[in-house]
Image (cartoon, rainbow, N blue to C red; front, side, top):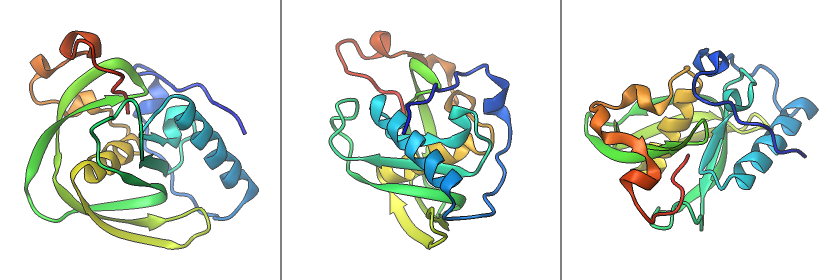
Length: 177
């Protein structure tokens, strides 16, 4: 469909709480998802939330196969997740480097739950219920934070672990969401 402009940190639309989707399998929802997919693919992203393109709905997409920006990342199945609910499976937290299409060129060390269960729906209203860990867990938490108006720098514990990708990791490729 179309590659949309991604809002950048500082835009007030990124700080709002997204509304629940009430109708599934509509032309409007399918068009939104097509635009999100095209945008994420064009930018080699691992995920994208609707608020990042100015749409205040609880819709996220994510997935990582072979991605030049994440050469060492484990595979995450392509997923459309609508009206998500996340539940940590325990209190174990691990820190990992994150980037974001809304915070281009930067990375930060972000604490996230290591394992979680997430529930929600696909674009047709079919239930999704998964238990995940590792990078998959991190990606889901990152994307769902966007639905609450949270950008990853807000979660960084020590701002000495936040900076420009080329300074933190000279010679490395990419690193945004």
